[in-house]
Length: 347
Ligand code: SF4
Image (cartoon, rainbow, N blue to C red):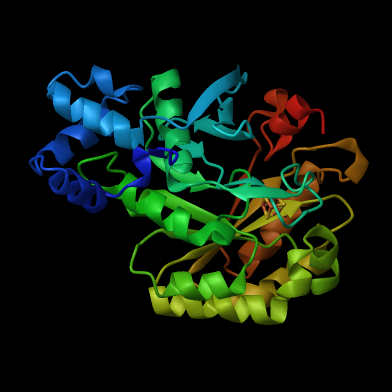
């Protein structure tokens, strides 16, 4: 017998089509969406206004859930980290980041990752598989249900490179954006990429007004090659023009993420190179300087000192580049990408 799919893998239109083909009225689609995405039920039998014969049919076609929370940790700063077990026993992680204005969830899109960035625990074990749209959305629903917090923003910055799972990523965004479902606006959703040029080009053609952020972390190839092996495939001389085209086509701002690493990319020479690299994006770019959260000792990467970060920031400001400093949340609960999962699996 074919495996039942997670009902969250279907867009509103896809579910409506199946429901009418099965001989049930199309308005049932809205009811199902309400139960799954607003009430966040974990079984079809909880859908109290749905007739029994329809529940039986739904249960024969779909499963209501594709993951199970196996661990939750809460940081002193309020952020929460979740470990989820998937149907095939793989483990993924997601984070809830709370601040005064918004509740943001950081979602995973893959089990593991292909790219082995030096500062990231997710790539350490290598790539296992892509997540389905249902598994991506399930992280969000589970976090809302467990934490009892309303989620206002989403970043695809958890385990995996989102653009390496482009189709399921876009489908999950479509479903998350659906008015009858979770209804989070596309402008409150950010995709973070390590720089997969063909997908940046593809995304530039996509009408969804989703935010894009590029993990840059270095202004010259020799340093970026060291930190991010993806740079050998997509070097800066090709990546930066692709980002420029994206900004032009989409008329959207791009955010450059830059992790401050002591003695590697935090010199004044690097600050000036960064200015040179991206100053012509203005006013359509900003820089986030990220204070590194040490992931595992083997990398020997050390966060830059506060005064070095401030000096770096000042240099960018002099070039009229908007720049903010982002302090890592959840340091006491291993909240860096892939870190808690790595600890759990003893990687
Ligand atoms: S930073 Fe992103 S692209 Fe790099 S290894 Fe980690 S998950 Fe993959």
